[in-house]
Image (cartoon, rainbow, N blue to C red):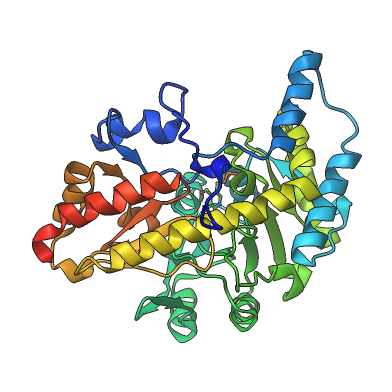
Length: 395
Ligand SMILES: Cc1ncc(COP(=O)(O)O)c(C=O)c1O
């Protein structure tokens, strides 16, 4: 067995008929048949979580009483341990707020620290829920488009200075590592984002939900190690890392005492507190057993990534942007010369693969589709074979 194959991740788990958004909604949303379609859209994985998480849930169900949770000390301590051990980041357990996931965390940040009508900067193309939450709260999205050249995304400081000066903004939301372009920002780039926030008086919210899903040879630097905490709010979650998104549990980590008091007051005012399932799963996952599983997961995903990129790049006109992190492949179809409707029809109609559409990620996304390759290797093989066939006339 090649080193990166692993029966835990190769196992075909049928998720159909389980209220699974990715597999059960694809026919209704994309017209991709449930019978032999491939679900490569929603960002969760087709894998079981590590045994340590399953054991924690089994302990809950065998006790079989589901009352209110008390004493979150071990939970906070597990988060503190994970951030120090995996990211070299010392977190004060008192700085941690637990939200109903990070879309909710983003909404709470927007609600706490901006006013209706304020501009909130996004570095596009970027995770689509940010814009939904900003607009849903009656704030304006200020789009700062990343520069894209030769398969690589980079900041465009001068252009962004002009956009922010023109549009006005009070907050920026950074995605680090970045979804969907897969970038792990360098320390210099992060310093650039910090300086941009400083120049324009922005509070920077750094969504680091993908921070554990980094490929060998890449190093994620937490924004907290780069930037003055007075302008910074960190967000992390165990949900992408351990495939427990249904637990809807995330952490907004606020190091500055003044900002912390403001956020705490807003959480209190909204009567928010977490569910016990998420807390038990997180405490179990952020452990040495969880860490060993993540290392194995990344070895497997690295194999998927290589297979996917190589096969897609071999199709004339298609280009997969090299992933430094995440399991989300961002594929550029501009080289096909086709319009968006045509290349999307070929992917969804001919290849029967449900994917995320580029324009939902904001400016710069038009010629792209996003493919989730956190699925057994056999599905990735099927996907690339179907793509080669669907675009076979370009060979
Ligand atoms: C950058 C980013 N933030 C947040 C989320 C979702 O977070 P949650 O499920 O905790 O609301 C995602 C999911 O894809 C994401 O990519």
